[in-house]
Image (cartoon, rainbow, N blue to C red; front, top):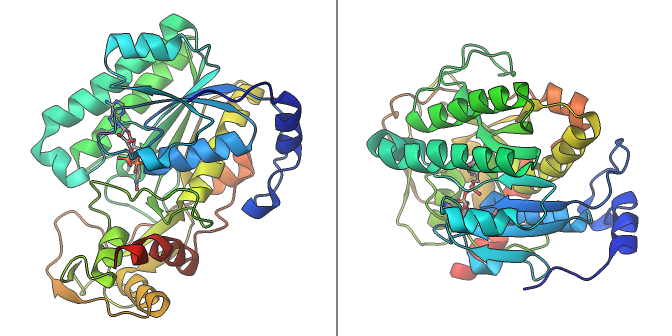
Length: 357
Ligand SMILES: NC(=O)c1ccc[n+]([C@@H]2O[C@H](COP(=O)([O-])OP(=O)(O)OC[C@H]3O[C@@H](n4cnc5c(N)ncnc54)[C@H](O)[C@@H]3O)[C@@H](O)[C@H]2O)c1
């Protein structure tokens, strides 16, 4: 695959007049012009949606992915692919020889429960791997890094909604790996080596509304893919982990943020750090709580199918409710979650899962 030819004029136009189909407002930031952006994990779930948003905003993209959980059908023809493990020094050298202006780092392991059983794997992939990337960027003089962090850095919420001033007390090793990297990014920035955006996602959900990304998320322990699988008959039933919480229907409440909203925030974060020459660490959530039962009922209504489920006991460490404050992202990035309502999320997922029936 080759990067597109010289489409600068088109790209400038597309940055000034974003695709009306995306529904995203024009940014208040001055135009930064096309950049050449390296994306680790660009064939994965959030990475592939972000690659699409970067291309639609007129940037050039170079992906490095080893397809451990990514999917080739998520690749865009105009993005250059370097296939392999970004932790391999030869692959990293190839990646960094691409004259990159910025790197978005998605490639990681992401199952909180699994991280408690296999800390070695999470240490190698998320901590050592990311530090190797940061060291390499610093040595190569690539300044801008956009990092996939997580709400898991906060641990059990002490108050709601959770803002960025909330204590950082991860309760699983996965959350610690993200916090450890954030602390390193702060040091590398303080020492003038990089400039970063650390984006703390809440529950990423949904798929591209127009079906431009079709590879299903792999290795996920998240609720909504399981709801979809139960609706499509791919699993006999869904286990609901507790219905005796102090919430409106007894089931857990979470903040779901549509993956296209996440992708939009990444493009804005890149603009912010390069225009303002400042780091940011922000929450990305919808600021709305949706319960497990509300999601099941929405899935039933939209799919027209039964969603078989069984109530079982609570899972240790699960808080009753987790909701983000995204005020800082509104303020600094002019970002709003625009597609993160239950209907849009479930409809965009069902569009793909129904094909598996
Ligand atoms: N999905 C969520 O709800 C969520 C929430 C918070 C944070 N995050 C973070 O967002 C990031 C992306 O998550 P996702 O849901 O898109 O995951 P994903 O598993 O779909 O994507 C990860 C991608 O990275 C690739 N990859 C993994 N290890 C690699 C390696 N060593 N070398 C090259 N490529 C490699 C995979 O093949 C895949 O394409 C992760 O860092 C994750 O921790 C995700």
